[in-house]
Image (cartoon, rainbow, N blue to C red):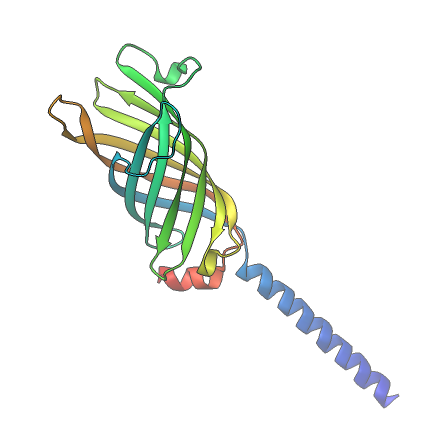
Length: 197
């Protein structure tokens, strides 16, 4: 009888430990809603993505948000679309382009890297207002450190303003500001909280 009670007590203890372990793992790798803001610069890219008829663009951003302080470098190729301009970017003073290839790396203060690949993107350039609105959707493809098992989708929205023009008065250097939003899973959340402090 005594061994039966002892055995029952041990089983309860094991069940409690298993539940705690399961909940602990779930909290470490929970899904995270991401909100981050950034600012930086953009210009013609030095890396050629070999997309026919496309211009290569490079942007370097610095920001902060849900996952902590970060820098972001994006390389992409954009071109005039084959389809008609959407109604939200039409008229004689608007130019419309699509991002056809690209990717980037976000580097966080703890040294962890988050890698993303371009899924789709558009740029609407308003010549009269001298600004552009760019929206890019990125697939999270993993990373290093706390992002080793990361996956998800992030939307990158930015406003771009010309800063410097060439001798023909074509803008060649730009100021960027905007935000990321989306959802990431597989992030080691405990480390993420430590970085934000």
